[in-house]
Image (tube, rainbow, N blue to C red; front, side, top):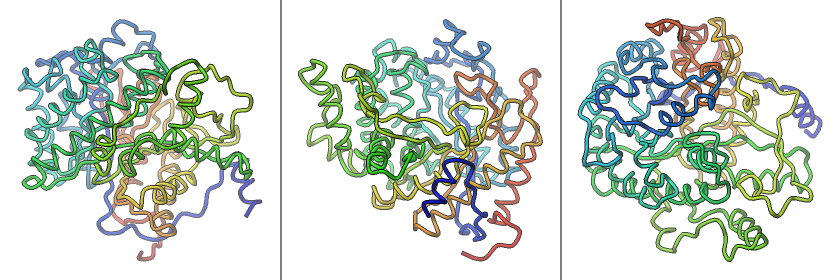
Length: 491
């Protein structure tokens, strides 16, 4: 066993594909997000969002100065997009609502009816084709007016988000049964307000990213309670959240490296899952950040504290858990760590890196480690009493958008096999899987250079022509047979 462990660290370690069928009710889908595909950034009354402002004022923020002004032009081509989703024969399509398209100034006193109608049309088109809408309320595109008021680190954002969420439930809830409040809150907060690598591009690590997360968790919980108290009885839907993480693989079997893995998981996934499923932040986060804060001269921890009432209010506010998982990394404790360094990564006191022997995608953070998803799912089950999980994002990037995307096919098959292993061997309650993404789109700071799509998009064409890649046929077949190999056995 130890020999196999070493081999998996030194080279790609792919098991034989699982030969058990996925359950008949297992959901297969694909996904996009509003800023990445819609375009029409200032049409029909849409307000400016933080990505619009950042990339218009600082085009060097992305590769080649790419932005979401037009991108895939899905605002005008949504019927064509739904036809592609239908062609895939998936059960569900995950997309996000653009807050500033519905509420141009971020507040409910000004509703943009054209934006509302766009999403009603999209949902109607999906329903007409027997496709379940999975709706993300917030996927990183805050209205600029709310950022001007302080953004996510300002506690006023909580009620602004809850007002927006309530309106979404009112407008679309009769046709939407799966809601996700937030996509990848770590990247909203750590990258948006800590590292500054996503909009609004603020660098205040270890301060504003923690304030952001604190408010975001309270906003999530309050929105869940609004749905539970005001809409669940009539709309009969579910509300969850989407949390992302690598699998953090101990670089050796030593107790120090095993502890480093657990610490990094708590600082990454537990940061958001622990308050929702257990109550309060993970102990290692509270202890580390307080200890380091006091050593740095602060009179209290840089990590805000929840009141006992807030802990109880947040606990239990997820009907299901969305998990975004692509990649893994090796970890070990930081030796002789700098006590004066401030930020999420420094506070964890864990060093992580990618093995040079792991196959890489175009995205610099993406390595092909399908065994990692089973390990992460098993960890989530053990930590949080086996919550209902749907893989809300998983996919592979290349540079050229090739139609002969054999690497993407291999990636999807291997990761799905590992998901099936987690269900079969570990009893993890996974009810669905979602490929990122439906089509090539704007991949944030990497612009149009990192292509994740099942469908190629010609960004040089005014029509933004979509063309099926080889992976489309393979994914269709997996969904049709509920099987990863030619000869499956019933589960």
